Length: 315
Image 1 (spheres, rainbow, N blue to C red):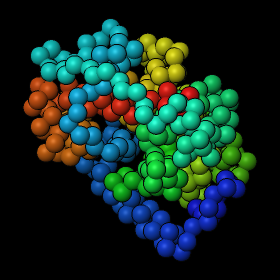
Image 2 (image 1 turned 90 degrees about the vertical axis):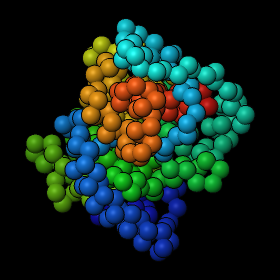
Image 3 (image 1 turned 45 degrees about the vertical axis):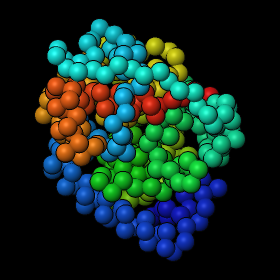
Image 4 (image 1 turned 60 degrees about the horizontal axis):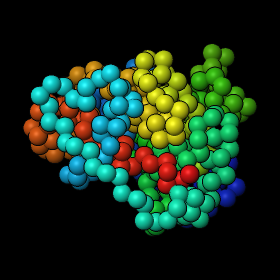
């Protein structure tokens, strides 16, 4: 079994005994809570039986770039159902931390720049788009440093890309991905291309390897953007458009992302997803304000994407 303290990244720091114990505890707790969340929320994507990953709840600020995001990702669809309240977009504020180049190359996550560049060259997804997705997903330490050993206590999501167990296995089983190549080389797949039971723990531990996580983010982004385009979403070639569309697929799973962009999430599904993100009480307040669960969930998610998936910070 792979030791999470020493994965394939040679620069990965060794974990202390306390850190290892914490990691094991968080993994066990997350696996149990993930089952409870699955039972409560169900799934919008048959391939991934767990709910969408729970990103941090936002405050009650106005959405950023809602109309623009709708125009980019689903220009022929209304921003919300008839009668729903859609707050006006607010202007984007310049990043006070400095130029985008400084934010990546000289910032707290500069050690990942080479990994992002390599994944971008292989998949065609811009490095700054990949960095924006990771930045929106990864837990952060002091100064905004991405935490490769992070776990979500409410699901099985882990690592820089916060991949759920089944999604990670799916990427290992999907032909042509970086993770599929590793799984084949290490004998982790059976004759039908499925992950073997005795290899599952080692495969899932690879989520804590920054390089593996970044490569998987790139493959997943590429696959999601392609699937959304085939489903009719008009996604431009610009880095921001690609990053934000890819993030919707990463966050929701491609099935729910397709339905979200088409305005087709059911009210019950939208209510459950929103409650998973902001809590039941806060979700009900947002629903009352927006006029429907679908509009409230849409407002919240597009606000999060507009505020946090900003590749210009990492160009």
